[in-house]
Length: 410
Image (cartoon, rainbow, N blue to C red; front, side, top):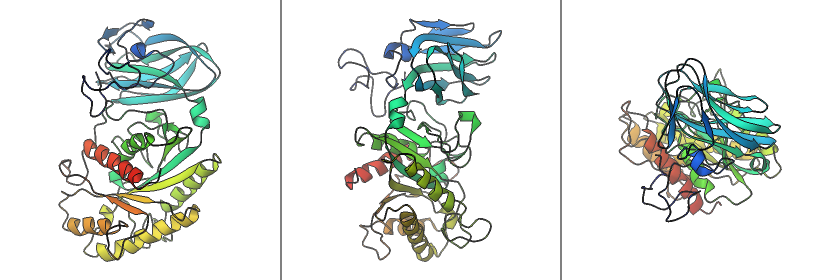
């Protein structure tokens, strides 16, 4: 079974279970399928094809003679319905989601351990299914269909997630843990690239579940995912939370040819700033009630040098000031998610101090109004010596959201 962060089997119930009746189970959203069947604690109503077997709280599949399905009969309304399902433990084959009566495909398949969300839009359907290919040998832990029609029509609070690999988590900060990196239906994101493995397209709203796809394919856990889930708890009713995924590993802020320099020149100058700005403006224009709430920033390893304390502050101030101006949001806050304290770079101490000094309350001459620095906890360094383990990103993402709320921005 999967448990909510910070909960034990005897703790308070997660959504969907009455207090005092049964211990909390896996975190599965409310939807069209009753919770016991969605969590697969009760397989009543499920039809299992060749190779599929029920085990407590899951369905497992071994090699079968052909593609094999699990099917659930449920009235699926017209509109936008998203089908979430969690894959674990597969070493071969793939799993995919479909609606039937009439047939519609979710458009992607894989064997990746994660919670996947296939997005469907159109007319009504009579049933849903998850298909395991002939060689798929994994487990499906939960399946839920969520009517997203009303939520997608709501105005949204947009948080721009930018910087480099400590935000993007492209190939580091793995593995994803579906028990911790799950989706809450009010949490959306705008991918920064088309990634067929996960069925997402650039700037088409998708479920904010790890791994978030920034400007290139990612397999890791970004702090933006934990931030979104934490900030959702304090977000007003009638609004959703949207992460605008803009980060890319190995990118620079300092210098004329820097990717994040708004006035950059050369082959790489400004090549990430301009798309971030344009995508944020498009997200704002998508609904009259949409608002850009903050910039979430994790970057600087590519700019480390003995002069970082003199060159980084004006570069960051210039980028933030230009973004505020371009978005018509002169007071837009920025939350800096600090670097890893254990990084062994000879410039790391100076880098940590430089970013911390940008906090509006630091008392330093480089402090900027509306900028808040959130230090990372020690003890979560991955073996590569630069990137955090997944739990380190989850912790700093939640801490950034709590700091944002404490500052009175919601």
